[in-house]
Image (cartoon, rainbow, N blue to C red; front, side, top):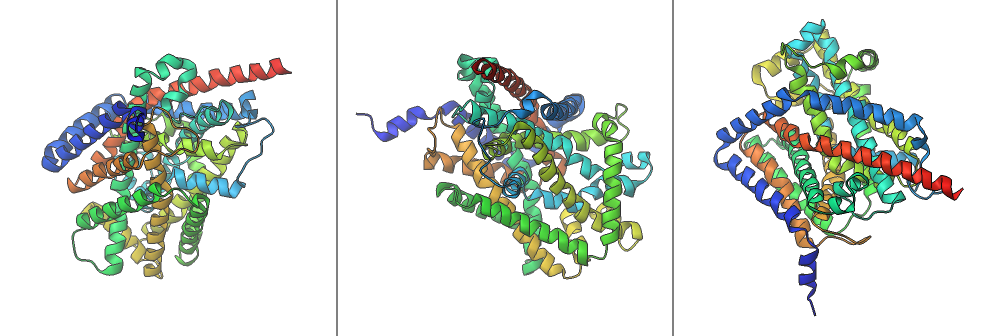
Length: 513
């Protein structure tokens, strides 16, 4: 009789498990031992993907948005993700809260505070006319309709696969099955697709950890008057975070909807306090409204801007990076959104996602970004000069918070918000990655604890290496840009597969009638 361990070993896809482990560990070792050489090599690879073939990312972004609109207005929009008469399990608020918190991590706080400053020093904004005016427009563009289109279109495809076709393999390769066929989707090609998906998942997590965790470290250092290096504090936080989400994922997920709603209350409580007591309420509302109008009015131009003469490299530095960043986050978030959307129609998922996801994201950037932008335009502070002098975005955010009434309380609230975002994101990501290690998992079956532990460690190794090697923002971004390239091709396959399978499904329904 075969032992349980032997059976378990046969069920594990060792290629999908060990190849990412070996490559990520090798890259991390390279960053630890030869940090300067590693950062230089990453920069060169990023130049090829971000500059030479950057148009690829822009085309996929615009095409995905068009597909999302088509899904809403076409016959596909009436398909129920589940049985035809099934009703949603979650209320709109609970569903939207879970969607928002799984789709965005703690980095939204970093970017909401600081993103406009990074744009303000780019020559492209001077070319447009008003630096401060356009500095408030681009954050809304980079975090709204195209990014959420990536999530929502794939969430529909995954939801259809899970709840209509009832396929249990939650893998990218399974979503490509209608086009590839069962033999290829479950064979070598399918495993290659899943390998690319896992690399992208690791890259997206590494980028988020590397960007957001130093802000958490800065908050802790200021609150507790710590004098040690921020790099050391950041690495300690990453290790503690790894321990916490490893414990959480090994002991099961309880109260995800509660945590998501708690995160929403904390987050919007922070925004409300900044809006009401910050002293910039009128400017925040009016400039936010104006920036939104400018973004909508110029949306096509912003979406297709390539800077062919490279006078500013703005799309190469920012738009292409953000589209790639959201693409690599599509490995986990759309699966979760598709899972919780059972009972909703395709149209409801797309429109509801835009209302809650895009709406909540825009509110964050309008409030937190325009607070400091208001001080800048009124002459009360010069955050642009501070950033140009130091290049330290985390210290800049601390300086911004220092100008707020009750800054200590604001810091505590930011700390709680970031912890809540981590709690609702990374345990589910580790679980998703662990599921990829199995050729098949039965419904409600969990991966083995050692496999979960392996992926929990892998998720934290690369961000620690990036922080340790003191990688620049450019190189941290590069990890996502490089990993997103093959994901774009796979996304096209998945959308094609959805339309092919959905058309067949609707034909089957007509025959029954």
